[in-house]
Amino acid sequence: MIRRSEEKDGQSAYKLICILEETAFDKDEFQKIYEETLKNENHVCFVYEQEDEVVALLHMRMEYQLHHCARIAEITELVVLPEYRSKGIGAELLQYACIYAKEKDCVRIELVTNQRRKDAHRFYEREGMHQSHFGYTLDL
Image 1 (cartoon, rainbow, N blue to C red):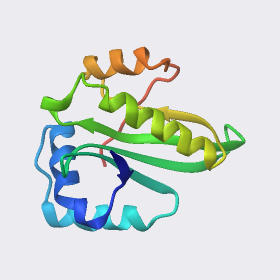
Image 2: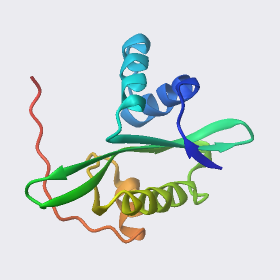
Image 3: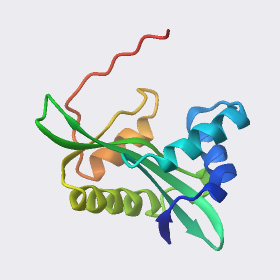
Image 4: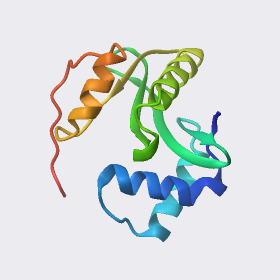
């Protein structure tokens, strides 16, 4: 079942994001940011729950962008627990997010993914997305 993420899902969200980023974040700082994200009307988090366990999470930001002259949705995180991958959960979450974004007047959905995530690249291409940008980062 897909539903909006709630404050009570913080530990599950923490676990999933740490798996995605292959690191362990500061739990208190993560929870603070997670709770602020849930309160922000331009952000939405969805979780996929199976047998009372959160097994996947999708976080999306929606905003008007000057270079599109329209409202755009950007998926910032999409992660499924390893033992639940290849079962259609990611595809369901992505489809759900697309429908939600369209209902919120977004004209496009975008995302960036780390170059090392080859399986994720294949997944997004299989779901009809295409690579159209190069991404750059600078640590501050």
